Amino acid sequence: MRAPLIGITADSEQPGGYSKFPWYALRQNYCSAVREAGGVPIVLPHETSLVPTYANMIDGLLVSGGAFDVDPALFGATERHDSVTLKEGRTDFELGITKAMLAADKPILGICGGQQLLAVVLGGTLIQHIPAEVKAPLAHEQPNPRNEPGHDVTICEGTLLHKIGGVARTAVNSAHHQAVKDVPASIKVNALAPDGVIEGIEDPARKFVIGVQWHPEFHISPVDQKLFHAFIDACRS
Image (cartoon, rainbow, N blue to C red):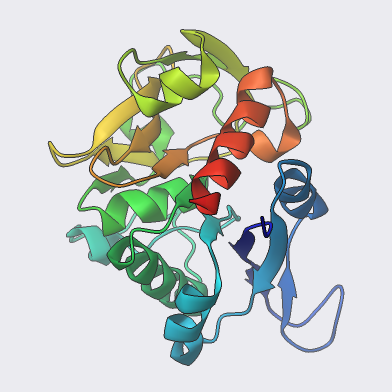
């Protein structure tokens, strides 16, 4: 059987650092996590005109994270918190490819900011800045390295994530200042932080559509590896 082809969205950076011209960026462990789970990773440039081609070509989509935010106007907010940083070209592309994959009912895994974008596409809203909206929040921008646990999450029973992970609680890393605020009734919340922040969502009406707020590509716990294997397995069918 052919190994499934997994498209991974890249980050985009302005001139400086790696190049004097605009450049794409992606941590290597996004790709290695896909490969180790049995998939073939390819990085998707932000060519919006190629969305139909990409969606037809790939078997699954991984929407990666990044140090930027979804435009609050996209989920109906009339004000923007001062902390919000936009990358409109990247967001336009990710909106397009995510909608195309949903329409084709092909598997999607959203990670960190990728979960937030997925939530918005599915009709949800976001907390623009956790310290401004959540009472006594955890340090969701954890002070320790990202390849270490930051806090635990509770995995909700009866969800696909619970079936995949096989546990009710797991340690995760944490690197975000925004989070999912609300989702439609058709979308399930599958993980919660101790402070009530939504840490995972899924769409039970589709074959495999899961978002998690943490970064499972770092393999902090066995749940992370199981999640990647389940994603790749869904992309085979």
